[in-house]
View 1 (tube, rainbow, N blue to C red):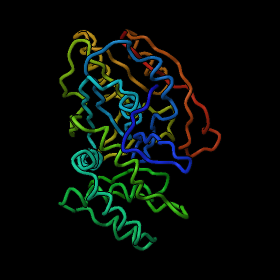
View 2 (cartoon, rainbow, N blue to C red):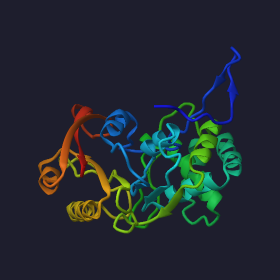
View 3 (cartoon, one colour):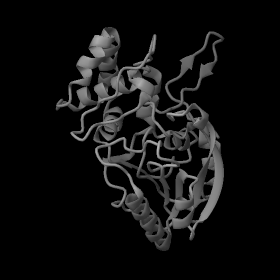
View 4 (cartoon, rainbow, N blue to C red):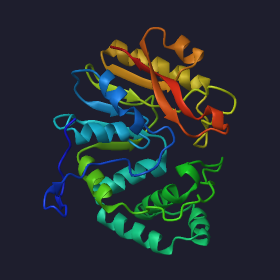
Length: 288
């Protein structure tokens, strides 16, 4: 796919290098490794683009980089306030965020990490976004997990030199997010119409009792999975084009019987058992 050219950088050879937007956070279940399968199964034609569980946004950024969204509107949603706030801060003006992240990088240490982790009641949106990226880039496995009070509680990771401020990528993300509608919103509430393309990447249905799906204050259990299926049915009846990623379990296969189900392989690196890491089967579900 073609790549968007942003502010030109010059290599030592004198040629311009293309800077493309990539996810600005590490995200469990991120889709960078599945981009080829996602693009292969997306509809040939569609109007606007919706992503109600945007997470790290790997698929969105790929579509933006390749100019697929150039003449379309994009609507990004997630229930994680810290995440959506960060998207909005990057979109609205990234330079103050870069300066704040450089400050975090200068002070980074184990003691500093736990001091920042305690700051659960910040009110300034820029400070909230900078804290979110700093903790995400330095915590264990890039895992964003909160307790029942909504307080981030992941320990520090064992990184020698974490990249806390990726200036070029943040500016590329700012460019990609211009004119994009980004809001905190439940997946049940959005406005997709006939011929719009909706990509759902929800917390996966667990493949066993050791799988972890509770990243937020409330878990995404079987009732939520069925509610999502119902939303997909309603959208399909409305004429929208729906694609869903989920785990390859009999439960997911059963509830999506009315859809096309494609089996793909994806790397899975987060599991309490080493023998459960590596390539695993996933479902890519489409209504078209």
